[in-house]
Image (cartoon, rainbow, N blue to C red; front, side, top):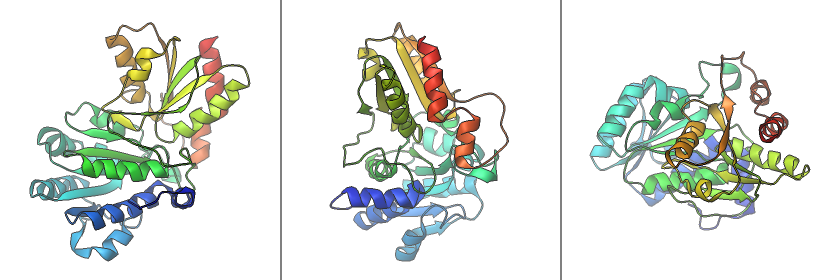
Length: 321
């Protein structure tokens, strides 16, 4: 990790996007720890791992288009004392390799760091076959696996370092495209099983994760103009999930926002917490649902699913009224 994280570094990472920032961050942790390996399923440059491959060719493995094999190879390395970061598109990482993730990471508890990039709509015109809209749901039920979902590029750097420190399996979910919007303007502390309040308010509690955290901040400004204050929580630690703010929030309106299906993701986690704790809360889950829509560019897909700030603000207004 850089000795100094300043505004210039944060802006540079933002231009690189989450994948590019992952590649820079992986190189940093590999320089600190000689046991770090980089593994990819034929996506070296796409995953931002080209710098790593050039500097540490003996610790870089391209398994080819063999995502299921990649998990097994990573588990073998992990059980031999190494720390493998293996990368592919989020949908292939968690759906095509689902049984291997369950077996090696969930059951065997191997110290594998699985990085699913291009989550949500980031693959744009590649279409629904490449969208990562069910990845959290696909592995959330598996024991032992920590799920991290950074909202911007500073968060990516923090989560890579968190993943390195965790002695166990991690799924790191990367979303967005280049010129990734900045949420954290300055350095901030990240901790597994925690989350950050990025905007304070009393009327509505919003849990947002990944790309939707920035959208939630935009929505909070829109609603503030209507004298509705919104507390926005950046949920970078999906699992374990911290319910502290939910338990102490006095109002009854709770909203979840995710670039993911509303079934089995953050919304389902928060709904479960409300039910388990017997809370008198009303929940609005915002994400993708229903049929798969025709593919398109990144912002087009947000608009198509009503995940843009204007649409979300309208939904919340209807919800509380």
